[in-house]
Length: 319
Image (cartoon, rainbow, N blue to C red; front, side, top):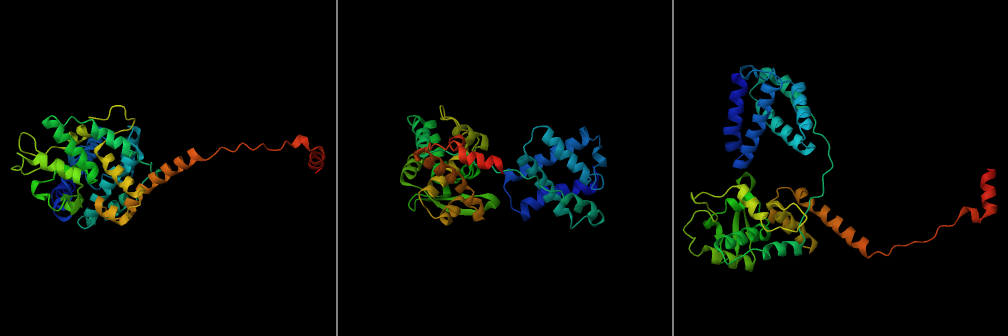
């Protein structure tokens, strides 16, 4: 791979994203995977040797071919746009350094994202959320842990990564609050309800000497897959895809539905832009429409038959 491309890609992934952008490890892994896929495509599909991958070689048409290739492989428009966003972010970074290739870089940056309708994301009703929590067997150590994870996911509307990285020192039982570390390592204080506080008190007995609240046998925090498996463990009979994020979304929607100020919910979720929080109102609108539709009587008023009014029918036919 040509030095200019490989050199700046390495600096982008290892320095720019880490130091200047301060993004999470999950984001860096995602960016790295995206560029691995791009390079594999260039080598295996376009037959470009690694040493020949340069800014000059990766033209606008090559990137468009790559995006079309991804769609042909079954990638959704949303996924394709995410892949493109990673590439454009890197190319914007390189604008300041690759002056000699600025024309080609700018051409790549002109690639538009594909428009796609934003789906209304599924969420759990309060009854479904309660049913999942009630299924956990708290007579076992694993059950106590699982119930606490699920309760924190819902109660604090936390992301899975925020639960994974939650440290003992970030828990304030007296103030009934915890500190979550979100995207960009931004920290925020969120309240916990009394039942969740009680679960924390019981769980911390004998576990308060750890660094992270949830650790594996190697004293390291669990990964996202572990939280996903816990979220999906008690969902038999619920006809929805239950992920860690659905608890976050459900909590926000339930609070909005009860009239809680959207500014407070924005702070709870850690959204930097309230427009992101407002997306949750789309689901509420759909739910309320369905509720109104159920109680609205069906009006079957009979429409007049034109053939019953011979005089009017003859006048219309003569026009």
